[in-house]
Length: 200
Image (cartoon, rainbow, N blue to C red):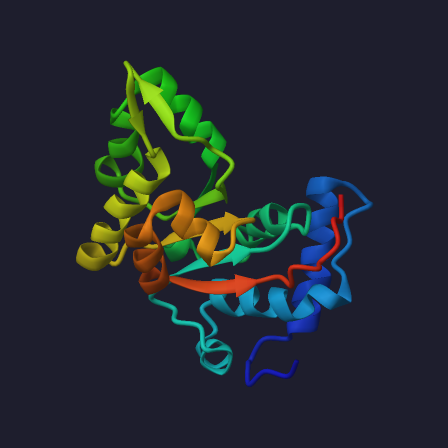
């Protein structure tokens, strides 16, 4: 897809493929069928305003990268860390790891990922964690974290990124209508086709 950008996206994809081979091994390849998704991610993470305008991407919001298991969402987000300007760096945190932290440390984990040191985080594989109990009290940990981060988006423009296998209706079923509504207003959805094959 052509963009109105000063960047050469084909060259960036070649560079990303080399970086991917360094990180994941020589078998790493970027499929041509994935280029439309990757162009949008490049535009967003390079803060390429003309291309983002073309793709209807709002640079003030975060990214939700959704798609079936094994399509490469997590690998792509790790690669995008190498493109992102210093002012917009982010870390990647698996949701399952957060659930294990909650079992160990309790409710302060919700505070840790929202209020205590606000920074841009990509919550990886939203939906793989379960509702957890801490001293007998059940808590939907990621729902609480996402609601808190919505408040920080409104007050401080703090961005959140997410990768997930869940559809919009599954997100609502798992986390409730309030979370789905807030995610819609704080994230740009970039979605793989549901028929995308597992690349693992």
